[in-house]
Image 1 (cartoon, rainbow, N blue to C red):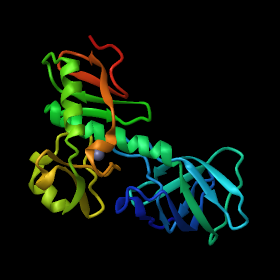
Image 2 (tube, helix red, strand yellow):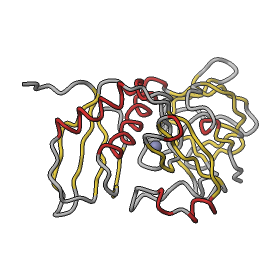
Image 3 (cartoon, rainbow, N blue to C red):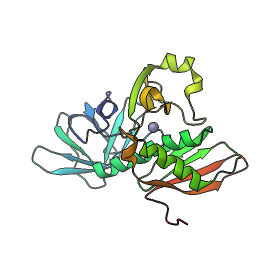
Image 4 (spheres, protein in one colour):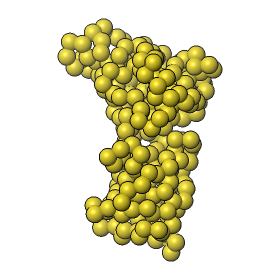
Length: 247
Ligand SMILES: [Zn+2]
């Protein structure tokens, strides 16, 4: 049996710990809960890892979090060999916070890149050490300039917040979607717009991922590489830290 899980992370990106009650344990070991602070992989962002803490203090280590047949289903997959909880069991959920926070910073950096580089996005993958964003563009662009523009936005410390719109409102305004191949997070009745800057002055983009709350939290980032992937596709690789070579 599967039930829907309340995705607590949707309303609080900084929630690293929560309580949950097991509602289902599947044959492959995947665990469903009544609610969770674990982000399920989607929109290019990796799912959370971490552990469940049982009443006796023992731990169940988790290797991945992903959606089931629908976005309403969130499956927590214990690592191979871990004990499995029982239906009805109450657990304390602990997200691997240092990893998730890196993903939030990286994910936010991808939004900033889409501001600095205003071309249609054809793909994106948010990772802990490196993220990539593919753009539909044929222009040659200077990566040092892109890095400088990104760091200006980081330094200006713009607020980042969510605005909720209905699936219908999104359908009526297709122009607000920047990604060509990445579907906006529709299907739950409401869609979150990630807004950057007062009154969305910097950007607003439908996205169901997790983001930091001020651009300064992104910290030092740089464009490590811009690769040409076909005539009209450029792949940007974002990494943490300052560029290694400065004249
Ligand atoms: Zn996002």
